[in-house]
Length: 393
Image (tube, rainbow, N blue to C red):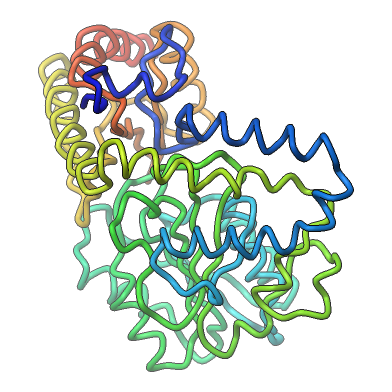
């Protein structure tokens, strides 16, 4: 992908040249224009902190409108939070759970989200019911397995829109419809959805949280909570501040001395991609490139090990792809971190190494700044090294 003036797209970012960056899905990458905007805003804040912070609530109301427009939701349905985990915690800490309350989720749930659910359950003498969803499950089977865990004690269903460890999507609209029929609230963890999906926030009554620093490339510390329906009246910020006279979402606009420049600069990231490439073109390019990268890397693993590295993902995601690692690698969460560090430190590739069901996986990402050569180099240099590492175990 080239810039309008014919340069490689990576020149719109400031990513280091000593690494090949194949893990946009974890922490994103901020375009230079957005970085520069944030630095100007920080300078303005530090030049006159009193005026800056006294006007912060008004500024955030405007910023909310910009982010709501990008997410294609109503401004009054959206509040700003630092990250998706903070959004999930906001819902957990706000809803009126009764004694014995149960929370239903799946075995694909993000670790912090699952642990938060367990905390809530303990505090209310309840439990977390985990639906075991095979990686290859289609929409119908996924819906069946999730709803099979729901009973009269279910106080909340928590579902990934796109799972972090397994890079698969979930049938959110269908689950929302089934949950509403039973009168059970739904919380959707959409951490990976903004930018990656043209319509990132499904039309349902309940709660949705999403990160803007991943595929959407906003500065980190930028996320949103979308709340629709009567339960939104219960939402309050994680930190008590001067928003207490207000209800959702205005109560979230009063954040004290928190640095809000990441939220304010998000628009520059959105506009950089829209004006220089187009969001549809970005998604199409990332999906096609991730497919190419997946093909050559999994073929390289298969050729060297004699074991098919293909992963059957029932509801795959265009820009995130899963590849099975050789047996013995990343079989635990701790081991996955060690393998990731080896790939980064010894081989100079930034990747996501995940664990699911006792198996290790390479989760490949693609964005505008990636090229086919990135994945070809990984297949040539990193695959043999990882096979040797597995054999040494």
